[in-house]
Image (spheres, helix red, strand yellow):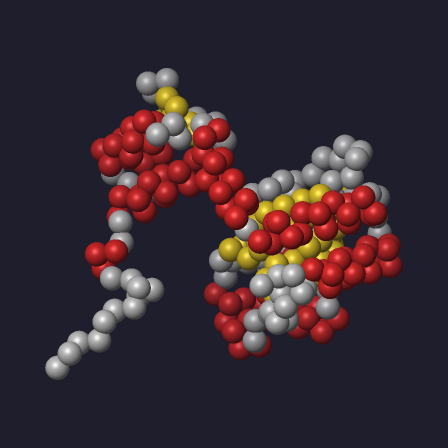
Length: 261
């Protein structure tokens, strides 16, 4: 009997490179706290034996990704080439960066693009008005999906059963006194947002910040991302977000729909 050939897409046990996995976990450990760390601190955060962490650090140092003074270790700017590869090759960023810039210019507020990554949203592009405005939505910034406008806009792509399961399983820690953590209330909010085509979250992710977001759909109607406008609560009221910002976001999201594959 002739055995069927394996598809190139089917992973085998021998396809898994454990050393690479450990190296990536170690690099991620640097993001858990600011500043350089000792070998022991890095090993503990990465869940690795001290000797293993040392070998990986020396390998990363040889490649220019990590620097050390002999006691403390820290990532170098060369690490950004990994993120740069993603951003340069990502169709969403290429298509939506000009759109974000246009939105920011028209609204005179920061506009951001986010995608889902597990239970979190990660911001992968932003547009800023010409004036300087400090904000916590830099590229790479992460927040829980359940309490953010972009997250709820994207969670709406799930079927009702899957959404209930996902909400029940995810961590739902309150980030502010206004954060909704009850899965039933979250489910109802996301279903309502899906029906109206946008999400507005007021001070749930950050205590003095509110945001309005719309889903970004590709050519076949599937939700692949979300774009938002956020502002400090002392400057922009919720009704202004709905009246002034929502039409702008909807118009721009619809404009790129046919372009996204």
